[in-house]
Amino acid sequence: MDAAINLLGPQASLATQPFLAADVGGTHARVALVRAAPGADCGPEILSYRKYACAEFPSLSELLKAFLARDAGIPARHCVLACAGVVMDDEVLHDNLAWPIQLSQLRNAVGFDDVAALNDFEAFGYALEGSLLRSGRLLCGPDVAESGPILAIGPGTGLGAAVRLPGPGGGSVLTTEAGQMDFAPHTIREREILDRLAPQGGYVAYEHITSGPGLLTLYATLCGLHGMPPRLATPEAVTAAALTDTDAQAVEAVEIFCATLGSFAGGLAMAFMATGGVCLVGGFLHSIFALLERSTFVERFLHGRSVRSFLSRVPVRVIEHGRHGVLGAANWYLRRAAVAIGLAPDRAAVTQGRSG
Image 1 (tube, one colour):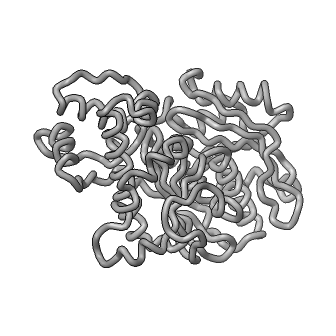
Image 2: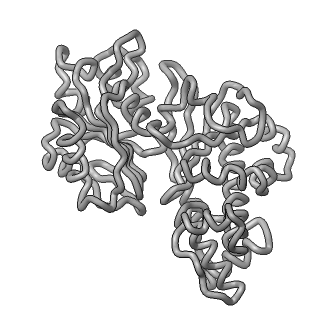
């Protein structure tokens, strides 16, 4: 029995105590005061919520203190974090977060009784149920999915991916570091880009190309191939120029971004046999949906092999990030508490995260 559950006595459980749930990415942190909703399923209910820019705070502890002081209204002694990275023992290992995160240090700095953490896309996986699966915009495939594994992918500051696996008690979620897989060029142009990024050969991760910073890398590399200095300095500027068709290299960069995302998603859909569908997560993808539709995403997703007939039956939807990461993290935390006190049988479904 871990530290979080030892502190939850039989009379003072998460069924009655509000707690913090935070979805911490490389650019933004979404924080909510949450409690178990009344009713049979005891799912999470958001009492207050705020989205922050991580760069405005010197540490995660200061960000959480600001939320508690301004928005919470009532004390919270427990906290669950969904973080872009890998949770190892007391630490979140990451490449893209704004600050180092140690769970015990955060617990002491803010005065929590317990802090638990899980991967941000693992948390999103725990939100993939009910109406969320039918929301968003259908990019390709049938409108209704079959039962089976559901894949969540999100290019942001990095490239996250997780798989919701069906099973008793709501199933479980497998977290991945798929964004760290080697990028595989598909076209001559992509090979030229890879040659620029790794002129001596070597490892180039998918997330170095298929992410927000990766889009900027694509744009700068394409400008270099055309022998001209880059005019745009942020991923947002590249996206805006592509949407308005005012910069040829920005247009090409977004086209290649969409194509490589299609290959990445199709490869993972094959690997996990994602008959339940693929969810492309994030406001960025939602904002370029028209460009995504016109791109070669679908063709690259389907691939050119016999597996195309399988992938054509997999629905792909674009879903805004919103509060889903916060709700998924809270869902995981409540389920873990229920397992520990014997209200739920499926311990394996909720043991990937860590407490500090």
